[in-house]
Image (tube, rainbow, N blue to C red; front, top):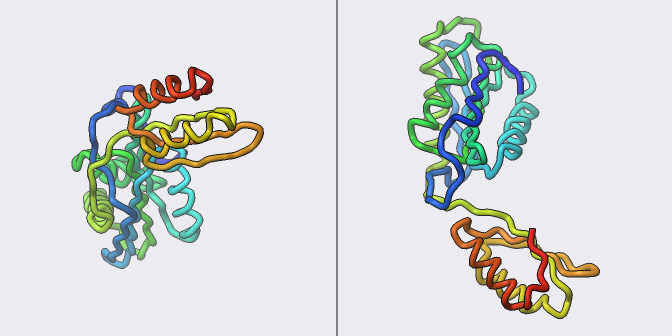
Length: 215
């Protein structure tokens, strides 16, 4: 992404992915208000990756193509942990950073916020912009609600048909969600809590006499 006031601390910022629970959003949230003629619309969403965060930003920009600004910020658990904010043409430090401060101040991870602004003809000044963008982020997050989550990993499980019933039973017992594809061999894409991945892999190897392919 590009835009004025870009903030991307990258590898040195925030925690790294681990097995500890973390705070994220319970769902999508929205907030809308007007300050001196300028309309601000806050959009917040939980995400699982940088790619999902970028896709949400693109979605909001497509929904509001005529907006004066669509200002994004996100915090995503990855390796390394990723924080990003852009002022999207607003004065440096007046838009993206206040949104990111709301997310970090509430210790939220795997979350993205985009604040849309329709300029109303009156300049708000740096302080006014900081307050407005921060308020939009805070209210959108409040509308979404928060929850505690645990880190997950996606494990790819490939077996022959003879082992598919056994493998599916283990997948169903361990995965919070999964997809199965039956072709020449059977493939499961299983989303498993990070803390349980090691045991999950061991059970599959043992139950199939190590005939399973894991990715």
